[in-house]
Length: 394
Ligand code: LMR
Image 1 (cartoon, rainbow, N blue to C red):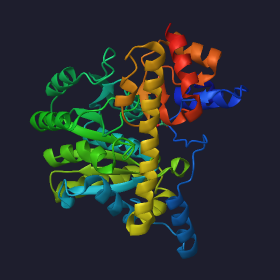
Image 2 (cartoon, rainbow, N blue to C red):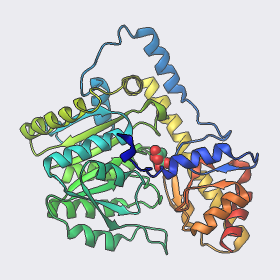
Image 3 (cartoon, rainbow, N blue to C red):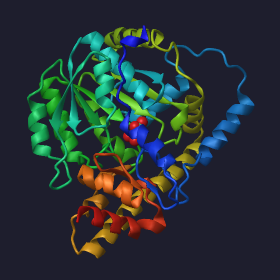
């Protein structure tokens, strides 16, 4: 049987974790995988999460099944968090899924049931796992212009012109906030224009919302998603609780669908539940119960929002420190974009040789496209990093 198989390509982001772990140099710096780290270089369990877990441990009475859509309290709390009042709830359905990736996966399968072989338009560039998930579902992938390698901002005019050309039956995958890998994001006014375009063309918006609260705050980061949902008849959202609740390995996320009316929402949801049942039957509960517990308890929620704010502000301050350190050393504003970007990442625009040089020569790890995880920057090594980056591009 297995002799028919050939070696599959490894995942570049996850492979980097292994390479970093195997590097014996004590001065190595990990700017690779998108995992938050505090000033001690630790990915902490948030205090609100700890408290929720303690509450769950003392209150939980059973481990019996919850059903295909998972934890219902989690579902409504996530809808309140993400959607607010942007869309009439009778048109919305939600299914808890294993992480943002699991949510993307079930929703891509759903698209393929509705429109077999439809094309999903992704930003150029996009998260390395978007294409495999879409292709594995039987869909096609194409790109729309996004990152301007000169300004390190968004090529908005080209992006909008490309979106204007799409039609009903096409799918547009958008990063709701904190674009991965670039860190370059749309302004509110640009979101308004994207929403207008989608409304006009009838292309289906599919929002990947993996970093809510990591950019400028929960409300600010939700602007684009809510604007889109309030403007169009149909939409999909893949929500992740991995980063904003620090629940990476618990695999908690949600697949959200918005249909034209309640009847179509029920029919579409029946297909979604059918996909889930035929894949993993039901999602794991622990992470969802933690999020439900936090969002439903005013004190825990306030504590979580504060912890999230600390993470966000730390990343914003690290961005500024790195941009300042490079400017001071180089007398140039070429890297000021790092301070303007938002979210966990910035795409530096270095060559592959420079990325390899930084790894081999300086022990600085980043993905091959020169994406850095801002939270991985050690506070006391910002100067070393600035020197290393400038050395690599000379
Ligand atoms: C990343 O982009 O580094 C994260 O989303 C982790 C992952 O699974 O790739």
